[in-house]
Length: 150
Image (cartoon, rainbow, N blue to C red; front, side):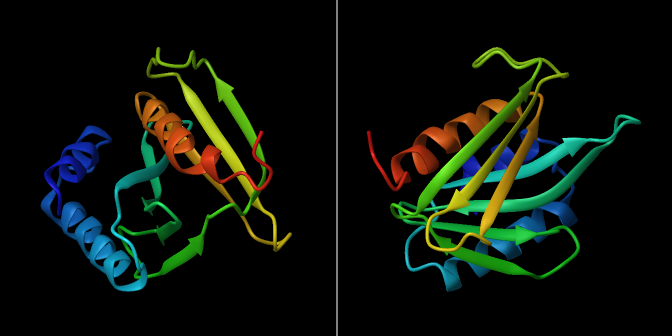
């Protein structure tokens, strides 16, 4: 696993050897199903009402593909979608998040709808400093793949 991936995973609280091994397993699966190198990763997570963090999925992004390992800490289930000029609509929701200035109470979610299949969509969620990582994923991989460029 790339050192920057390990560093990012630890920054969002995935620090134990078993959890890091599960993330590495998902990344290996991504390398088998994705025809391009995974350049960036993102952990979809949120904070429960009682304050604990819930990790939903590990996402991997290349120039033209979005890989997902749903419940990667416990399950072996991987998906891949092409993103190349397929994004039809995006809905961004934030709470106590000023772009680039996060607090522990910051929340950000991005809903993405694909153009060729109305039933295919995805939502990415982040809390705290992970909101900035989600913002960077949006800028690098979602925004450039809008179906109708400005």
